[in-house]
Image (cartoon, rainbow, N blue to C red; front, side, top):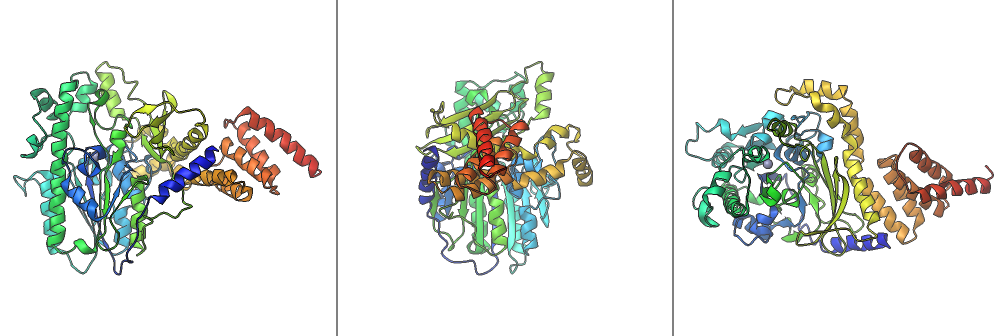
Length: 566
Ligand SMILES: [Zn+2]
């Protein structure tokens, strides 16, 4: 029953998607990727926020696709950009706090598009999204605005970015398609919106202004030097919203530049954010510390003039989906924005690794670092009755399944949610398949790591092999879901095939192998005994399974052996 309800929910979701290509691209498309750093979706007017923070994003959404449920896969800049550029989860690309380096071996957006004859130009206002950590792979030109302040006196960094984009668009070869990446970090702490945005959303009191001006607010809150009370929260939000408006204004300038240089029509434009921001909720500020929805739900708008019809897309999508879209564009094909009816949207996964420097900082101030010194991951799926399921895995507190109502409130899961729990748990297992690297990576030097050295160390820690393993495990949960749907409609042969695919992609997980064995048995598959034995082997290796399942397997194996004269 649960399987059937899930299947129906999935069909309902897909039924709402109305994306359609009007025509295939006739010539090589240019691509513009804009990251409005630190912008949470629920503070964008394009996403229904009551303050008019994002008029330009709203205008873009009216001309293209707005993804209502887009999720970052990491709560801070470096791993989130590494995921955006590679399409991989942090546990797969290994570029996060303890290992601040994106290895050369990964194929990035810029490398893919450069190989497809695009001129590649990147400009960033955020050092955590920069060449410092090898994120500039594949860019012919990659500019960091803080190094250009002398050349552009009087301009804010995001203004410098636009001035450089303007100059580049003027001098580039118009016949060549291009890839432009820009990161506008206006909404990042400190919040100091320029007029008129500094007062557009209300007056912040002196307390809030002091907190907002503090670029080390996170460190100071963690050290107990600052705290955020209710009055400060409203002021912080007013200033943050002013910065979101300022970032949106930079987006508006960029749109005007694309028009002025006559490239907007041939260009696929993607606007998103790398993560959201905590504005004092639960005492939390900045980002990085948790996997709160406010940090993961980000805007995502795609415009492709004349090629996609405007639509709001309710189907959830992770930012790791952008790389496959770009791969399609590079191959002159159409991204799969209109999923086929039998494709199941996978659970979205986000990961946060221990921020070791912050933990040290907290301990140095004599404070309890327990809450920080945890690895966190969550898997998220929309629920059939509205809202969403969220499985949280905390390396200290264990696993917790929550139901999120549409208003963001959480409730304990109703009975009968075990299948959802198991499915989301599997998604997290798969995502973490490459995680041993993280545990072994303590000896990585953060800053001056040359790639050769990083690779040598990665080989020494077994990381390269682990990544290769993890990269194939991505879609086991999709096969598992398909198998459960097939079981619900008593199509055991199909269920057996789907379970077999899931078991191959996520090997050794007893719960999958049990269902696979039961489906094989029901389908009278010639290898049903083998399937049962593989389940019992996984149990023997320590993979947990229900005792009733083990009893069934032993009894059924012996019956089948007797029937077949073994
Ligand atoms: Zn960021």
